[in-house]
Image (cartoon, rainbow, N blue to C red; front, side, top):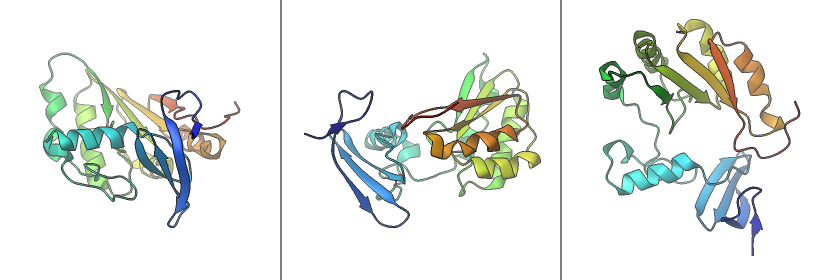
Length: 190
């Protein structure tokens, strides 16, 4: 019997092993396998969901990512044709931007990021929540982005090792800044 993750009573870890460069960790569980860079992130909902969406034939999830780091339906893909969608909504909405990806991923072109910000600026009736683990890129690009007041900017912090992301977030001129402390993998002193 494997070791259970804290707060996870239904999923059992069957094995953990180091693979490849950059301290990649392969975690086999009763609910699937997830590979993380240097941390034991378990059961990434986006990787699981993209695999499911690919199997269901969803058009946007047909490109496969690297099988060692992401997997079926999880290749980073831009969808510029979807950018105008918020302009068609009649009622205000809260939008989780890139809920299945990361707007500040190094492979997302700056022009695309600017296009996303342009849509957010042009639709002030909506509230946009943007979350990233790429806080250094966020910090570097933030001065050149036009930050509308309807954009909430957040960073993920899994444990004390990633607390530096908070310092990066503090430099961002977003009207609202927030933290996502999940998956919380260890103590996080205040």
